Image (tube, rainbow, N blue to C red; front, side):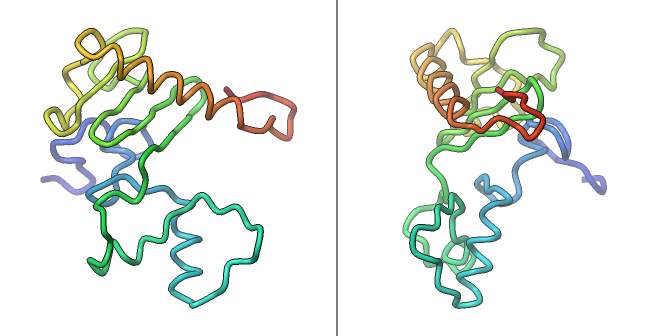
Length: 149
């Protein structure tokens, strides 16, 4: 494997393909680090604080009861987005030259994101697209007044 290579994962760092977002055997987010650092320092999280991040320490130490820090994750970069639910990933970012639309991948069977499962599993595609739309509707307007979703 070359330095900086994503190996069998599609895409590269700073992309919404798995090669750009996978850090651990399961996806984690940058906001997980804050929660993890607080736990590592023994800090008490203030009452009423709304932290979306997962404490990753149990995953690092092997004490976690599940292998996934998150059930559902979202990424957005301009007009591109991705939703991850278990082994399923819905994205409108294409690293293999596809054009337009939204693709659904089963990462357990297709880590390189090469076989769109949208027509085979329209139920999962629809559910994840609905989840993305609900998540997007909760996003605040940017400081410049632009709704990013």
